[in-house]
Image (cartoon, rainbow, N blue to C red; front, side, top):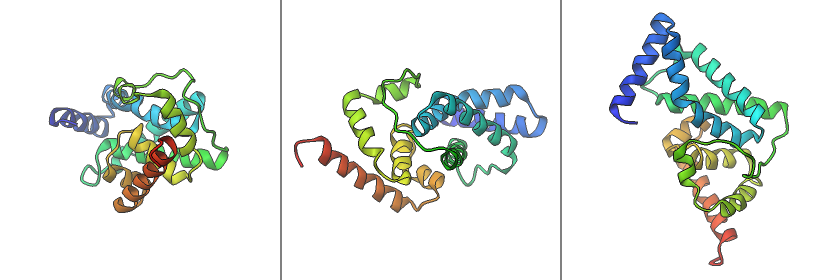
Length: 182
């Protein structure tokens, strides 16, 4: 995030905290809604559930905005951590489902630019879906959430070295499974 966007984000946060400014709250939600929705959708696999959880994520974020500390993490990282908790709560209630990429869902343009080969990505998703929940979360935060390793470490509550190790181990497994070089 560039300095100007970060300054605007902090201005919105202050306006919500000081005056309960609804326009500033709406601007914060709009700035991150598509990214958070795409991340949650990939985790839960149902657009209705993803919409509900995304709404719960932003309601929770706005209610607890006073506890956000920009010195500890970026606002986006803090949102992903809330989303991860909402997903974990959802998983405790419902069995998770691996989702094929054929369902119609809109993603931000940056995300669609990442997906070069849908068939390969579908195979990768099938393989990732067989991994434990933490590895799935790390993979999806990195690939779909476009999070850095330090951000993923904050969201998952894991050490950055462990996050990197698990991510690269999973990539190596995917490479072996999806290429003839194995």
